[in-house]
Image (cartoon, rainbow, N blue to C red; front, side, top):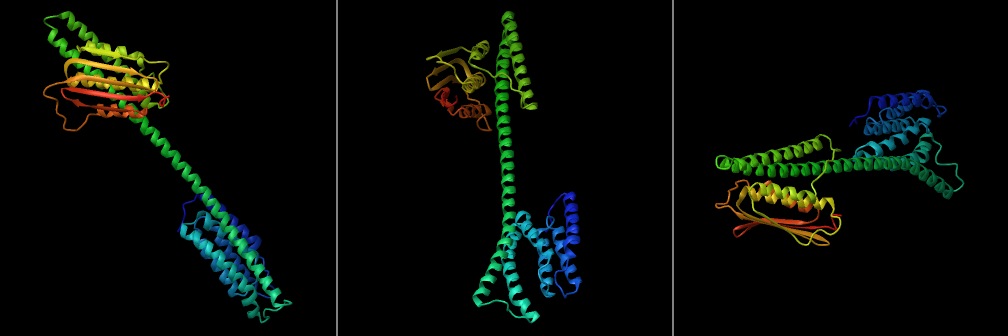
Length: 389
């Protein structure tokens, strides 16, 4: 029934309504009639203006009460009747859908009522009859003209409000769409950072665990090998800590974009895996031709990082084969490693790493698969180069 509007708007409406009453509500254009009647009608119309934005439905009801009172007192049109246009405007602009359509119906019924009152009811009550016209045809033309003018002016006020309502709804829709786009972008950014965090932490910890196990076994027999393993652990941990700090910085400041891994960083990744004691064979044929989009380079790096991490964590410590083929329009990769026996059990379904591999490929328009093939665990991916560019 009542809308939530700023107090300043309500005070302004009341002040304008008071001024309207002083200027037009006290004017009596009905000679021979008590002036109090016109004052009452002016007061009702001014009250409708005062609450028009606070409650369009209440304003419409008050305006109808003023019109009915005016007709009951057999008054001619008054200057205060101008308030009806403002009331019809707000019913379309700010009212509920029901009030909006009731306002349109009021405009149509009001035009018919005004015409019937002026040319049928009022002359009959005053005892003058529908005279004053040269012929019935002239009478019909004049009455039709008054009806058309009344209907046009009242419906025009309502239409202006409907246009404002459409503009408000369009603005709200744009704002809602903008908020949805911002939220979707934020969610995508959080997902990207989560994938990067998983890739960095999982791979680094896998290397650290493998090196720590090797150092523990070699501590007594080969102190130099143990020292080398500890040095690898230190380097890997520092690199992981740097990457994690960078990702946390991006979480705190969305504008902060740090350097992402590229193809040039693959050799360091392969070196970390070999340092963990894995026999790694890498075959790149054909080699990259021209500039590769940064998004494809990042996807290739992260997919290989996760695949090699899985080989470290769940493999049989046997040879791992990596094959990369850079074609003009796509790149394909394959990582094979033996499966440890017995295979590790997972009660929570596929790990985040395998899901991340598929998501990484999908982000650049490609696809990836990971699963057991006999005694091997195989990760394959195909990424388009032209589409990502």
